[in-house]
Length: 611
Image (cartoon, rainbow, N blue to C red; front, side, top):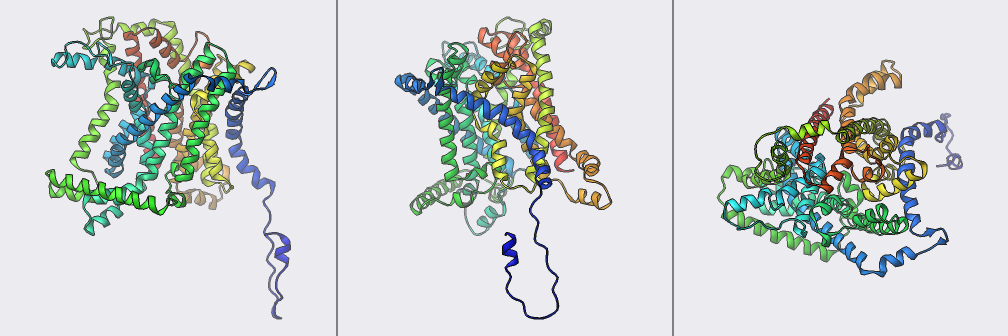
């Protein structure tokens, strides 16, 4: 409301003079400067390291030395090869999304309904699988599915087969590896919504006479749909930009579109065509996000309800959905009536606390599926034989000694540690003020700001990596540790912001007010009250950023350069050239190291939330 509107008051009857209320002041430049200073470093980082490099890469697809051109797009659609690769990419991504959500839903459901102690144990195994290197998990499937691998050897000993099966380099092996890699992402995304569902609603439906299957399908499942949609979106976007698993487990008929980008940049040096393929990939991702936003709403990715957008479905589609859920509920109730169950188990299932024995068994098997491949590397790393065959032959530490004696491996480990520490510190310094701004700041457009902060997660990592590589090549940062720190910070800082936002939402601001009421200045309050309490959360965010950098391969594949590379890049070079027990030893070291990091980060996170 402006000043003229305030001065145009109706006439007042005669009486005692009323005090004139001063007009509200417009925000001064100081009021804008403080929140701007908190978010400016992160905004500048993303503009320089994300928006500009990606925009420059996309511009290369329509501009060359002669000016504006669409020749790269004509080449892209002139041959059916590239369209076929896109269709294969969509096929792999859709099947990966379907199975990841289908198998991840029981895990998220049980975690959300379990007691605190059991929830922490289950969540630890999901987080461990989530942060374990993609390279380690994919290489484990190479050993599992190989001709001399665990599965073939087991089938041979059981007499089920007479000769080893060809289990690798097929569509099914790619799907298994992709689902194993991305199921934890689906679980964590769905869990953020399921934990906010009011458990009294299923219990109320059960007390009114609804049977367990009907309670689940008609009450609980519709409330969890925003989480299912968000989990499917995150898995699909990640899968469509994947290249590690298809390269190692698939054949030429499972080539993904990101593999074409790598070939165009690393072999053909055709930046324009790589940019055109990147535009095609980014367009698919943006279309998916647009459809998701129109149907559900992007706010559901933060655990909020679907709101008005979730209720836009027409009457016929709503009736159809109700009929399907009713049929599923009746079918589930009929199945449960056949299975022998105790009265105690039935009541527990109705109340939604703990889950049935069948559900716990299913979740246990799924967690074994997630964890067993990485554990498989441990005995193989002590094998005295020179080949990766199952079962191991003898016991030896020679492969660990070979790592220690190798300058390449030790330089890669040292560089990854230094880059990871630098990334963790820089991400924490930049991301923490932005989290304060998003949680406590009074600025407008918080939703847009949060979407911008999360953009490094949304944009396919391959596009970011190629864009940064082209940008670094022009300014001379290819192969430098500073360049790796800046690039890794770009993709790691969203995790810091998300972690610190969760911590700040559970922080009691009355402690700050009490300190200020006793005369403490804002900086003194921040230094002596806020930061000591948030110390565990800060350390947790640092560890998550460190783990993100330590396991990052896509950016390092392009920008590490030279012989002094990072550990994931050295791992990738080794695994693409030969299969050696040294890789099993490195995988074991990585698995144990990441497990220790996740354990410490989880302890710090829980302590910060209960502080």
